[in-house]
Length: 125
Length: 106
Image (cartoon, rainbow over all chains, first blue to last red):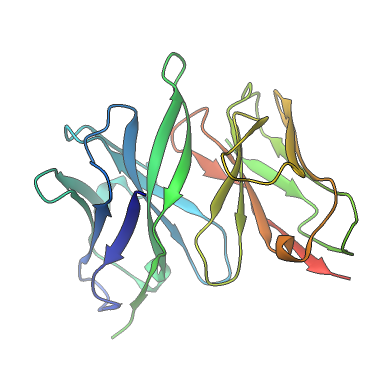
């Protein structure tokens, strides 16, 4: 049973860089129909997709965050990571890693079929 | 693409039939999914491709629609179904979620 688990600091100071890692266990991160995503949820609010990466390193990001986000992958450790720079209080959220499953590769239809349990990150001095 | 859910909340009783709707700001064919989220937990995929039931999800959940209008139906609400439900589109980048519908106990 494949599982995802987020890890990283729960408190980050304003203007610094938020760094999180998602470890994939019970299966390989190198599957051909899967991308690996970061999604966040501010307190009491809805869900926002941050970006996704393929095991080869091909990535794409939410335009609203693109200038501050880097997602990387380490297939040897079965992990992918998120870096968000110049954080402010608005970046306080629960951060989830998730598997993006392309169930129809002919037209690119996808869904987030597996999620980590989430990790809370607070931006505060 | 914006996804607008309605209602934002509803109260229902065990056994009720519940319908949640989601409207896309432009046609997205069947590029829609539905998730359930319970307090303090990660979202869980219920429906993908507009109508396909995710493995392990009870058959009382169903999805319908295409184009701009989508519906999630719970045929007979169970105690474990009280949660917040989100629609999501994957027609374009960035994929976006609706604002959520909280289903509460009447």
